[in-house]
Length: 192
Image 1: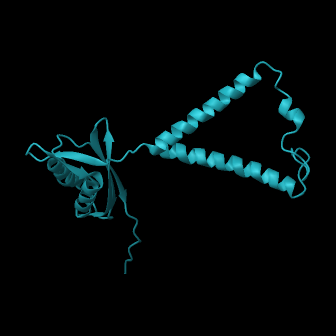
Image 2: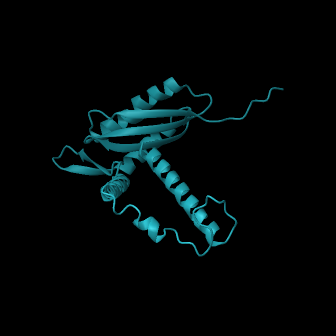
Image 3: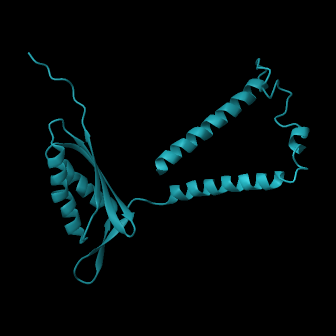
């Protein structure tokens, strides 16, 4: 969801900035602009003194301005904090059985799971991401399947081998995994 919010916010912000910048540039360059255009030429200002002071005497003006700015600040802070939050699993504490734990990097476990998943029959490419949800890790797998691969068999083999090996080697009781399968594109066969 964050990816969608980022794209929409960047797209809308970009369109607004391009539209306002284009309007200012067109007027500043002395191009012919429509009659309803707010700026007519290089000597015009963006906001006249009358426009800036029009609503100051109204009682509702300052509360609305402050509320709108507060909403913008809260949204900007939410987007910033969402960007800074690390969704990926940095490291995992693995019990070695000797009373001391070992730290396993999340990327190392992802790499091992990807290598094992790519070695499965019918898998062209695998991308696995480990995330920490509610204190426990979970895996998200994306597999690109060959045209001849059976999705059911591939999914069963992935869970019984790669995911099971990762769960066993880390000492986790469960490792929830979401798997997305995609078929690889291939050219048409020629019959002679």
